[in-house]
Image (cartoon, rainbow, N blue to C red; front, side):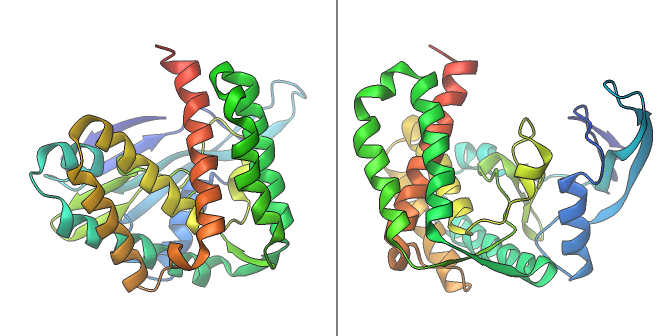
Length: 269
């Protein structure tokens, strides 16, 4: 996508990869706005349009741009943690904000129950692709698959709409607190895969992996911030990773495998 700011008041995100139907970013944020979620940017509107499908030549309709309120002086989480000497209180508040968004996603879209083996199969397929793409992972493939295979032995799992691509760059620190952004999931993935219900701990694990990136640059103090994020998340009613350790550990492996593929394709050094 490409974004523009107009008059320090309006933020417009133009989607460059167009798909027919509603864009998940607009679909989710409009639904969250409807239920009064306080932790997303204010949605002012969106732009839809019609174009011809390059394969069929038939007209299709979809979303072109999202229009939101702009927040002067705000900073995303990635830049904030590099500026801040201590990130504990902000990290706790961020965890609470993510938990509230997850609760509001349930209110907006409901919940479903799936077999744990279905979640395990999704993660195993992504791990297999990662091992195929990143040769350095081949020697650890067996133990990593064992972590994911344990998920299949769990009872049925309650799933919901989630963010799907959560990290420190997808959250905004404003004078009014934390806002969660960019609900379109992985933009390069198929549209239907970005609407799949999943467990909210997938987002939590993804954020913890984002903290690990910071730790690689900034040292041990970010482990405390990571713990504060988890404390804030559970205190605000989110699922406790300690009570779902098999699932949470599998999601950590799942996200790390995704990151290995991303780095191999974009920053191979």
